[in-house]
Image 1 (cartoon, rainbow, N blue to C red):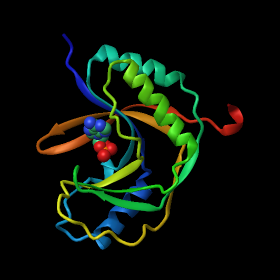
Image 2: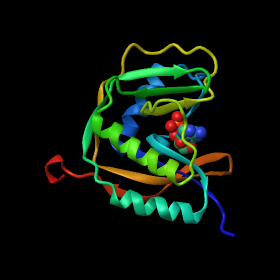
Image 3: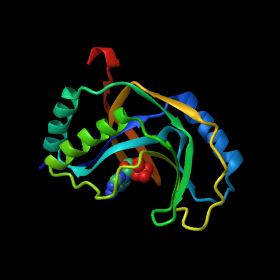
Image 4: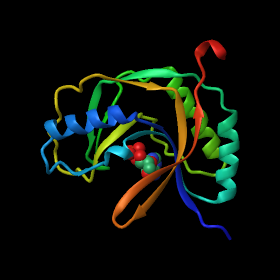
Length: 180
Ligand code: 2AM
């Protein structure tokens, strides 16, 4: 029997934006805020699939390739802390419809393929810290970065030598609105 892998669909952050976020984070949060997420791991999860078989992964790769979704841009203008999960995040006060639609389609395909989906509403965010269980002084604002999303990807999450790594398995382009 083939091994299961921990997979998720996500939007990546361009390398330049990753660097800007990391620099701002170091300037704005105390060092003991929590476990900082590595620059290369900054992303917006669209649909979490959990530990799944190769067969399920192949089925989801096929459906992802048939999704027709459009490009969008979003302002990363919101910051928050979820003490329960220990996540400090940045996100969007107003998530673009194209993003919500893409996540919704991916999450329903995931559910149809037997991947349990959280009952919590989808709240697009970039996790900056994990294990932040104590109160966090949240900076008043982000630098209002603009994230231009022109593709989405399937990632594998692995844990090796004490480090979480996300490996991009496949990427699909998002279309210009005029092409749909
Ligand atoms: P996050 O989106 O809050 O950062 C890979 O593990 C990604 O999937 C992480 O970004 C993580 O959280 C998200 N994730 C992990 N477990 C999850 C779960 N049970 N439900 C939804 N998302 C999850």
